[in-house]
Amino acid sequence: EVRLVESGGGLVQPGGSLMLSCVASGFTFSTYAMSWLRQVPGQDLEWVSAINDEGKTYYTEAVKGRFTISRDNAKSTLYLQLTNLKAEDTAMYYCSKGHGINRRERGQGTQVTVSS
Image 1 (cartoon, rainbow, N blue to C red):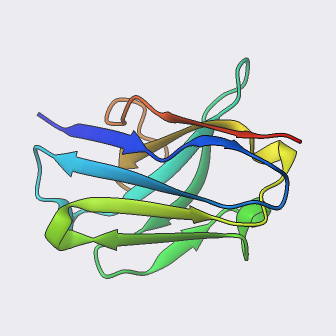
Image 2 (cartoon, rainbow, N blue to C red; image 1 turned 60 degrees about the horizontal axis):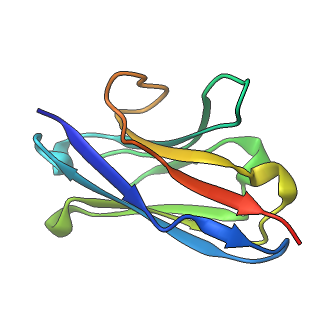
């Protein structure tokens, strides 16, 4: 059974930073691409970033240059470094298995709120 557990969210001022983590279990983490998604209440899931099994990274245009995705296969952990945060980054952030929006295999989410 795939299990994904996110952590690291919180309340941060505009321009601030956060590091999100996602611990994976139930599958061979190192052989899968992984993604970060986010969702604002009332809106659909949005794909934010992905990293493939070789470490190649991908970002949606809105976060390029501000967010950095990475992975530690030895710890089965996915990371998302968020910097220069903006109010529009406020959302529930989820990690998911694969490259793209995977509604079925994602964690419970961690809330990021950017506000002064």
